[in-house]
Amino acid sequence: MPSAGDQICTSGTVNTGVAASIILDFAALAIPGVDIPAAFGIIFDALGIFTYTTSALCSNPPRYPGDPSFQDLIDWYTNPLSQPALALKYQQWALYQLYPIYCTCSTFVPPNTSYPPGPSMPTGTPPLPSQNTPPDLTCSLSEVSNKLNSIIALLRLLLATVGPQTYSLGTSHTVSGEGEISVSGVVGCITHPLSYAPGVGYEVSDPTRYFDVGSIAFGDSNAWYERRLNIHDPQFHTGAPTGTTRIGFTCGLVTSMEITELLPAVIYQGN
Image 1 (cartoon, rainbow, N blue to C red):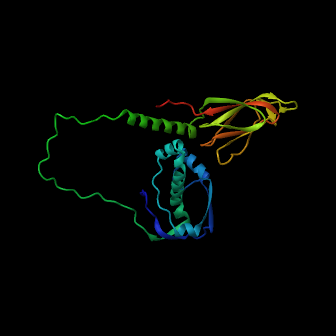
Image 2 (cartoon, rainbow, N blue to C red):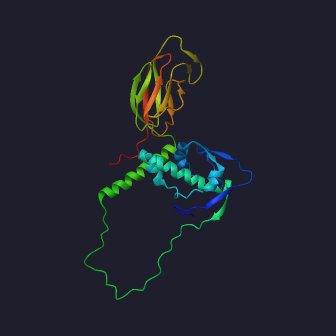
Image 3 (cartoon, rainbow, N blue to C red):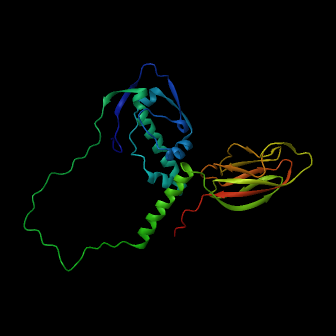
């Protein structure tokens, strides 16, 4: 198992038959012989697609950034400011695993191995433990609370990524026309047309399918994700990307519509 900072080699050459450039879709990444837990998909999905020049990759082998850890998932979920550094770590981790597939090392570098110091002989007679001063086995309430809140955050993340879909209802917004609403921490929303304009088309089915009754889109301060059509009344829109801060809407032939926020199910309300 490599350690953080290890480098496979200082330089390498492109393997025979490998193209001049490779395209990696991290959202659908599969590394032979490496099992990537589904919970880490939230990070790889955010990386998206990258194109690499194989000659540049092989001549500058990546260093091992450290093992994946569930603490990374907690930081990703609870501290958005840590996401750029974590994304770079997991990009380097994937390239380290894939390097032997595309490249052959020309100069081997031994791993960063540290050895413990040799044994030292005691001098003198060690004092007997004091019978009057028991060891301090206490810890502060804040330490216990912080550890419990970290575990709770991890459980919420696992439920949102690999567990069954769970949610609680949040704020409801009554809207009309088109525009956007500000949200925080949502995992999705429910749309419910309150009144229809004349001429709305529909298809008799169970549930009834409607046509041109508006749409929504999740987004953040940078951009929007793909638009989602309203075809049922009411309708779930789940899977809001992490970091969603707004929901855009268009009502179409609906004169007014209710949008209800979906929030993660509350496991426990920590301090």
